[in-house]
Length: 311
Image (cartoon, rainbow, N blue to C red; front, top):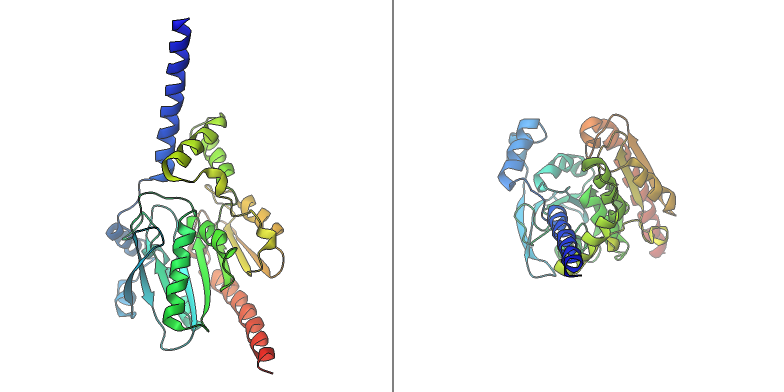
């Protein structure tokens, strides 16, 4: 009897240890140091150092709503009320978003690049896949409205983690005028099942649910709460969905499913031969064309509503 009880206890402890290991692996990933992300961006050609240095900018540190500082870099235009927040992917920093600045400056947008919690120069003890990151986006939107006034026109572009966070946030805040979701996942639990099968060759999916329980105990949120697709059909915010057709990390079908769910103003841009978060780098001209087409539509509708309101 004692041998049986000890065996059961040992098995439970082993399962708990494995779940804790996977919880840490998922929520505390090996991120790339802030300065290194800049250096690698320069080496890859994503960042032109002369252009970066000459472009006017301000560094911002503001308070999150969860007790830590979040860091951003503000690239203003001379005048105007339009602004775009750009949120990067997991393990990187805001320097990965600099490639988009010129595209939005051409359209008269102030650009804010922001470091997610636990990344770059922002605080935070772990990555929460949008649970807390969406609240940080809320803080940034509040700050931009303080800077530009109540007539500000604010949108968000996110890559991967940034896109998933943006989709979770815009459902809660009608002040965000549009969202560009580049290679977002639709459901964290389903994504982790896919990664478990492909990366570890394991199909024991109860491990995902056990790991979620451990994460909930550690941090106050579980994987089932991270579902950008949830209630997407009720979201009125216009969304441009983007995904690389050759994305090996987040299945393109996740974006296709969300596009089908979304009602109202939406667009879809699938980029041939593009891997994960590589859509812009694979086809910069096509990417810019699609984004500017989307912005023209959003701004046209906005101007029409403003004109009607002025009559």
